[in-house]
Image 1 (cartoon, rainbow over the protein chains, first blue to last red):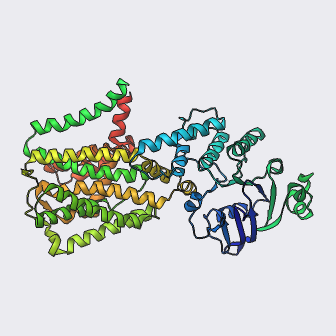
Image 2: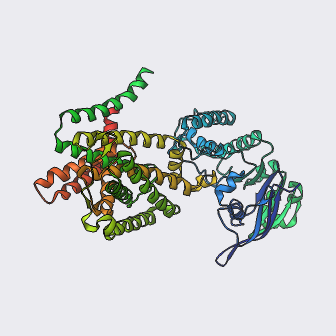
Image 3: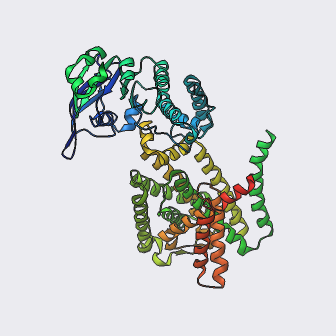
Length: 249
Length: 311
């Protein structure tokens, strides 16, 4: 069986700066892959290329066995290739419930409906209630997003992504700025939601990455330095030199 | 439950009363004047879908309104003043133009959106102004047949006023349903966080196109009836300055409220009609009121009314 996500030979330059060179990577269904590396290593750029927000200069991206290079971000999302952003990207003026419903309606194929609104809203609301209950957020849903704490906004941001029922979820530093407990809770929500969802996780928190990932890919200066199990990566001399240093001990 | 019913029924009753009273009491001049407020107000309300929900400020909205007016007038001149025919021809023409505009503005926002809609509107004006054989050029089209529906002639001021009122009510219901439906929510989402909308699988281009079609259809329906108020249509009805006037009316009435559009159009047209009887500088008054509203009532008259009602 072919992997869920296949990246082959991705290169991307911004002017003279080579942000990504010859990145090849595969992600299997249900797998959790940690993507680590120093700032500026190209992790977010790689996310942008995979999700269609940036066009690579070279290389190809295949998702679920089919090429997606020509698809815009929204079409990739519709296939189940879903991402979050480095900052919680929510609709601050809308309620928590409406934020999640925006995702739920699109997933149900009702995102642009005008007629039959009542049924669409009822369906989406039911799904939102389920998600809110699952998340354990102590919130009714009627609160304005802007009034929620940063940690709650990050969880809401994640719930929006989960409402899309992703096959592959790319999380860009979902735990940055969260306490250890909040971060653990966030990752538990993802895993409890659907164990078949593959996960690619950018994080700087080494404990989180090594504790939760099946495999780890290390990037440095736009290149893929090493991919392997947490043990193998932890023991790798090049990885220690480039990034982990004494953190690995 | 009873309270919810009351809060829904009260505005409807007020709107019906606001239509019934003038229909019974007002004279011909005022009925025509009120009909003009209602038709322009309907067009302004459709602009509010774009501006209020979508943050899409268009300087081409008069092109939709005016193109519908011309199409309706031309249809009436050649085929007679049947109401359904006139409405169909005008709304259809506006929808076509809205589709074109929608495709053109799919990927632009802010300044570029403003310029693009301005240019598209000016193209419509050029066509209206120079295609003499069909549009009458600078003279416009006169001598339109009166509106009719089956055996009834709808050319009296009272009939026109009630027609405009019915259209305004229907358009308002339509616009409200648009705002409340998933498409209306998506339009707000695309205004607030376009990037996130793409990541959620929404095509912002398609959202905008649909909003433009809805707004264009409503503006077109209003524009279709407009020539029959005075049995005349001229190039001024497609000119960009009318688009700008619509934006002023919208800001005075209150962006995002829908019904404020009618207040804004009433205030503007009242100033135009009554103050211009005393001075040529009536636009100075519009300017002062506009500035005062922007400074003191950023949500317009409708926003102030809503605040007052809440106490």
